[in-house]
Image 1 (cartoon, one colour):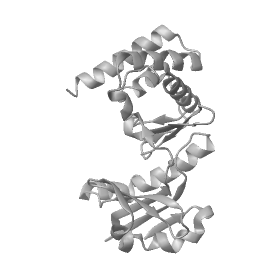
Image 2 (cartoon, helix red, strand yellow):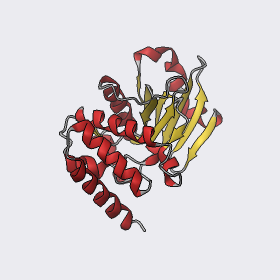
Image 3 (tube, helix red, strand yellow):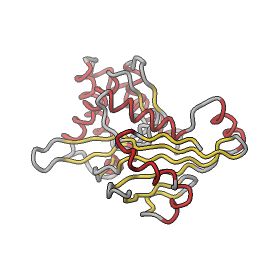
Length: 240
């Protein structure tokens, strides 16, 4: 067993250690496929999100055991790096890896449960009207992340959480599912525009997003819009 706990949460170490035995009987299931995600109240009352990664297939077990960090490790370390760069993501608490015959088995990632209740699937059906402040704020949020040399490689609707503060109208964002990230790279205009292609929305959503993003990074708005629409249409054309 390989266990790493955020020093801030050392008081939860024993509880995290027992997750392989207690996970299935705790909390509420939020997602259940090959991997499972549960919302659980930790012993200190803190609401946490625990993701259990099933044992990989044999070839991937070799890869994750000897050649590449497992997903839980990458997600934990990426969360730490994001926070250091001022990019919001649920606070990492711990990861735990189990081994079988010297190879990776099941693994667990524990983080704070996000208080943000909405995600970008909303843009699938809703008209843009009324959402303009959210789109503009998201463009600036993404521009900041890209300027920090950070690229989320699965920038899809379910991985972008947001809420609007009732008091001041400010939009808050967090990104999740962060095991696939790149750091310390230059994010070019073309790379940035391609990064938006997995999002859902109508053309006016992408036009506003591209123009606000271009303004935030000092790019030509028409070029940014053209590239964003090109990558978006190409991505979804091959998935129909």
